[in-house]
Amino acid sequence: MDDPSLPQEKSLDRMKRQAGYHAAGMVEDGMVIGLGTGSTTFYAMERLAFLIEEGLRIQGVPTSFQTEMLARELRIPLTTLDTYPELDLAIDGADQVDPSLRLIKGRGAALTREKCVAAAAQHLVIIVDASKCVGALDGPVPLEVIPFALHPVILGIRALGGIPELRSGIRKDGPVITDNGNFILDCSFGSIDEPERLEGILTLMPGVLSCGLFCEFVEKSIVVVGSEDGCRELKHVDLTG
Image 1 (cartoon, rainbow, N blue to C red):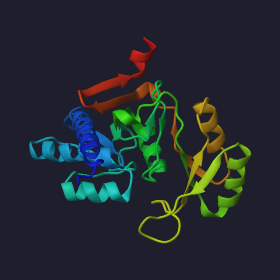
Image 2: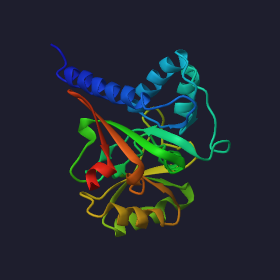
Image 3: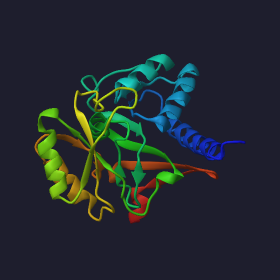
Image 4: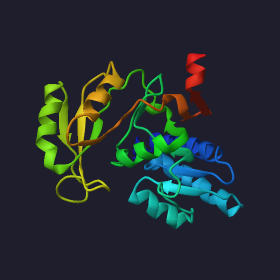
């Protein structure tokens, strides 16, 4: 008997590919871009590698070791924020996107470097499949936490009414270790009514390096949504105009 999940997986892969290829098409010759982490970003990098072979000249700043290794495999030239502290744009994925283009990110445990790259970029291109668009952010919020402060942060999350869970490795025993040598706490709050306020509270907790709520970049964000009918772009100016 066929696995009933396969048609849906193929459909999701198709939507991710459409969004990734569309985002790659927004990259212009000579740009320095941020390269996010995750399955959807892979498709953008795959398309960029083809365009580079066709003559496109770009440099990329990877947000994780995984992305760096993939970029080298695809022969995408790399650079750093030390060399280019200002980027033309960044391409990245998201776990959830709300109608105001606020995001939850961090499923790939690269949220701190992704936030640094997003802040450095003139434009932030977020690529998602249609399932990631939600009416209100309600997914687990990842926090990158220094190991020394893990338990005080856990107590702080519980005091806010959240449910913190230390992310464990899949192919290793023990917790996931980020590229920066820290832990990831996935914190469930239910429906998040005030994402900006919660982001501010979580970011100010001693020991929290970065928060997976991305609320400050909405004005420079372009969300590319892949669906069965193709791609559409969502921009802040369209929502406010």
